[in-house]
Length: 203
Image 1 (cartoon, one colour):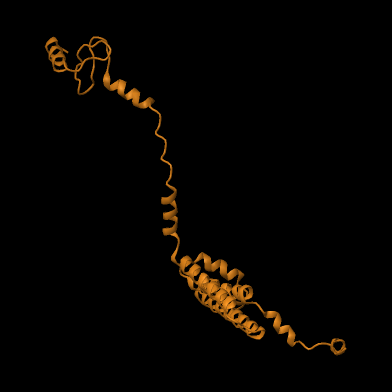
Image 2: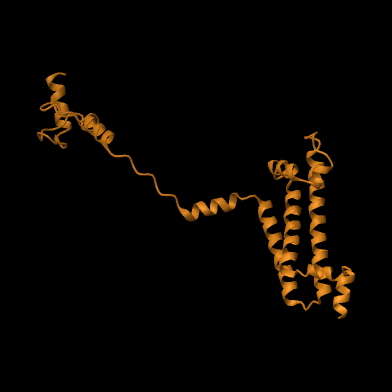
């Protein structure tokens, strides 16, 4: 570099002093080099950035994560949940607030359990019809004893959601009737007693 060029560069950088020797930097907007002590600002800044600690990752927002999980939950799940809640609530109200005689209570429970079984069977047959063309090993009895059928149904959701919905509602109807209404023991009163029991009752 010629003396004239160095003098011009020093003059242009007169407003930016070297942090070491306070002499003007050459090319202050670029390298920021000091001819006197050899300081280079761009090199110093690069070393400083390389040695800076990594920024800690931001903590996840619990509310945001929960909201995201709710929005990603499939629609069939909410439909099934609402149906189960409705069936359980209606059955509880009927068994708790209605004045039912033992026969009426037993009859109501029996009818609701039967309806729940029918719902499950309908859903299982629909699932069988949907999956059978793809699974040649499925047969009629898989709709009656649906252990293998349901594993295939869950793998094909949401296209098989009808089977899941009817199955969930059927189970809810059966369990709710047995817990909230009950009275099935009344049917045992119609079982004929043995002769010995009849004689003992007469005494």
